[in-house]
Amino acid sequence: MKNVELSVNGDILTITVDLTKEFGPSASGKTVIIATTEGNVRLADRAEFVGVNIYRKK
Image (tube, rainbow, N blue to C red; front, top):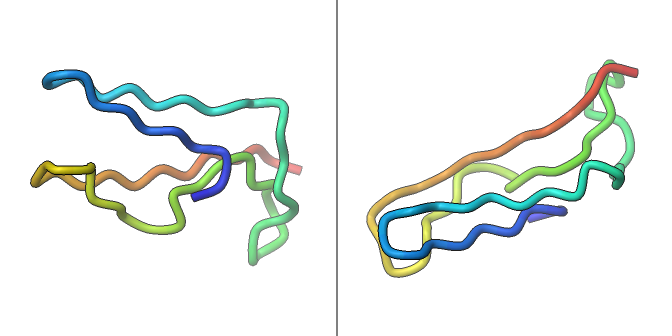
């Protein structure tokens, strides 16, 4: 994961992302990657999965 923090408190998922960071262009070059889980990831000790991509247009 890049620039994504996931925390579960009871049944509440909190996703934290620093919107000031950038990780370069996407594969297509049309957007700039800010944060990603790099695919779907399982929440610790739970059955749920989450996938996050945050980006902005160039």
